[in-house]
Length: 156
View 1 (cartoon, rainbow, N blue to C red):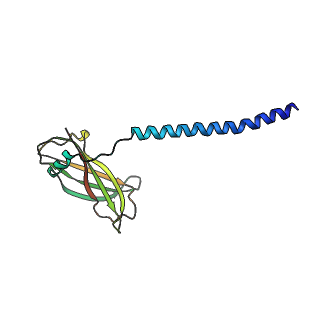
View 2 (view 1 turned 90 degrees about the horizontal axis):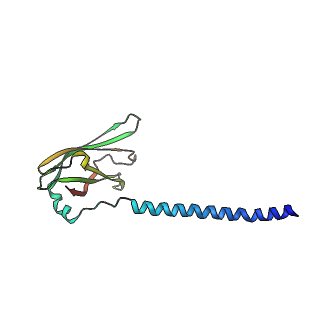
View 3 (view 1 turned 135 degrees about the vertical axis):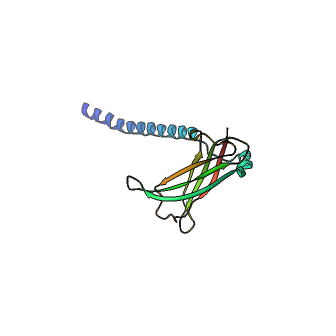
């Protein structure tokens, strides 16, 4: 009779342990999602000040070429210059590159910095080259120059 009592108590314990494990996993997932949402970088947007200044930034000599990387992947590289003909120093400029397919549907939309603190910013009346490599573009891409839109400007 003692063996029946032991098996009954252990059969009740298994669902309890499974339930406890599910609750613990759900708690970790909930905590992780909250942490990621709170620490995720905020989307960059043009401030009214940046919108007014955008006319002072000019993209020039923008070209595109494709080549194969060392690992055999196709890389599309966009190069050009950005010029600041305004009176303010800039610490960061981010552009949104939008690639389309043959039906004018978006294949890739990616924000990339073309001016940053790492490149030394952009002083008034200064121009700097930029290079934007993209790999892993869809085969549906129309092979045309992507749309380049200034997404954010930060002043020094």
